[in-house]
Image 1 (cartoon, rainbow, N blue to C red):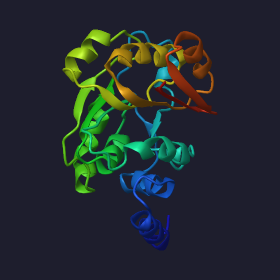
Image 2: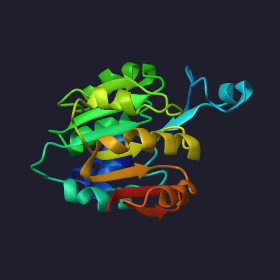
Image 3: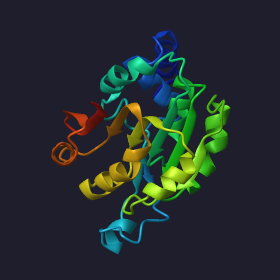
Length: 228
């Protein structure tokens, strides 16, 4: 990207209404934007992939708003929480280098933010950069997390009576891991919540079948679950 293109995008971001699709795209780019081929250093012992597939290629992050085009949907469902006087609790599963957490910290500066990942080394290495760009007025609370295990008790202990208002699953992306994570999180969700599930076209059908007490919206590879 040229110097002038960067300046134009930065100007559009600063002039956009906070939480709007353009603001979300600009904020994502501010904290690094899309990254590819991030080395897998640690995976779950229940990871179904063959070892050769785990070692092949790498992970991608910072791609939700612009690359995948989720900004419009995020803006719509996050709008009720913008400028909320409530003390929000946000949890993201699958944080990689922390671009998402940085974005949430700017969008909701007084919120309590939890980040969960099987490998925290990537965000720890990137933390100084994110802070230098303006992230984390309140430091995020980071924990290792295996999406293939039922972590209901662990999450309850970590949250210590806090209830999650906004939840994002950008982790392993399989039906199995998504459903296990949702089951682990379900009892620590606020009475009013929004839950984003990224990069999976099929799991919404299983959520509809299994949980009748929530609303489920499918937007191709993005599923949104809300309180009924």
